[in-house]
Image 1: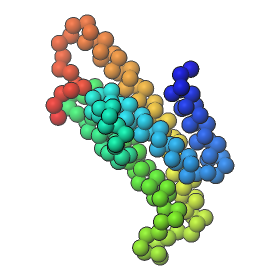
Image 2 (image 1 turned 90 degrees about the horizontal axis):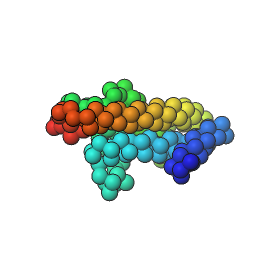
Image 3 (image 1 turned 90 degrees about the vertical axis):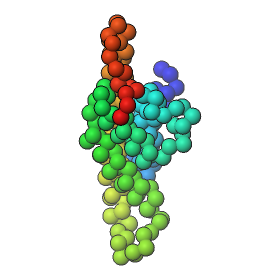
Image 4 (image 1 turned 135 degrees about the vertical axis):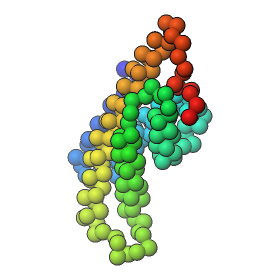
Length: 167
């Protein structure tokens, strides 16, 4: 087992234990890390991002670039509009809970009581766990799609390269 696999096993174990022990903010943070890593891997593999650019991207930017890369006409990638929308919506919830524990909006009347806020964080952690798995599974399928595409093209088929086609 390589170190990346070992770290992913640890990350998923920590998500489960964090949710079980009501450490929802830790779970949410690890989930974002997994999703961001899977998106960065995809974007690097499609030459959408260069290696030196990956760590300078915000979570929102990674999602936007993911949307653009998969909506490219002639793209070989699996349709994932719904997954992208779910991840982007979750990103907003993630921001609300990770930053909102002690930061209050200007309208103090809109501040939920702490127990309700924690229930929202729990829901976000549980949803993030499912989404991090879905994004990881999607990324694995894209690796298989790219292998099949490269194998077909290695046998002399003259097709336009959808990885680099113009938008």
